[in-house]
Length: 85
Image (cartoon, rainbow, N blue to C red):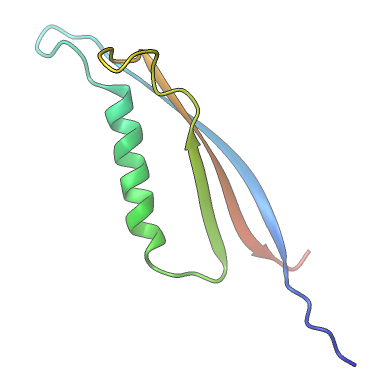
C-alpha cells in the first residue's frame, strides 16, 4: 500500500518594526498605518493561491490606547515554503 506524503514545509520567521517619524510639516508619519498597509498588501497577494508558499502574521503591539499613535508598531510573520528537505 502506498501512502501519500506531504512535502515538508520550510519555515522562516520575520519580525518587522515600523517607527513613527515626527517632522515639522506633518506631526507624525504613522507606524500603525504602515503595518495596516503591509497587511492589506499581503492580503491581496494571498488571494493568488499558491501551493508552494504561505505567509501568516500578527501585529505584536498596535499601541497602548486607541487615541494615541504608537512610536513603534512591530509585526511578526511566518513564511512557509514547500521544501523537499
